[in-house]
Amino acid sequence: MPRINLLPWREEARKERQKQFLVQLAGGAVLGGLMVFYGQMTVGGWIDNQEHRNDRLESEIRELDQKIAEIQDLQDTRDRLLARMRIIEELQTSRPDGVRLFDELVWTLPSGVYLTSLEQSGNNLEIRGVAESSARVSAYLRNIEDAEWLGDPDLGVVERVGGRNAESIQEFTIRARQRTPGSEDD
Image (cartoon, rainbow, N blue to C red; front, side):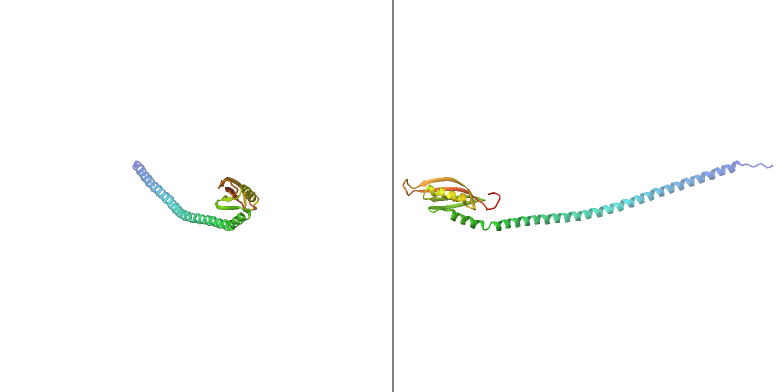
């Protein structure tokens, strides 16, 4: 029987399997590399897409912030205009008050009393004048107390001017408040 050497065949088969293993290993490495590259490209695409969306959102937010600032400016302008309108309304409603005040001063003034000056600060009045006697100053104080548009009289100063004779004149200063009938501060 002839002799058959199986060893080189085994060795060749082992070399062939080793070569196949290396090819499979290289193929696996290439396939793994391709998978990693594909994963990086996919995730990179997702990141780029999200960054694009974020940039668009930021530009929209900037536009909305500008619109909000414009709205705030408009509201500030509106508030200023409303404040002006309220002031104008107050001025319109208080416009006849000066006339009423002078009319009330005339009606409360007793004979023998003459006013020399009138100063107004807000609703406070300082009335200066001269009278023929202290009794006429007292009558004037009572008239102010009973007046519709005047109130809270306070006699500040009464000085006798002239001599001690019967024709002496009394200088006086009265502080009073102008009031509006029907308001809460009556």
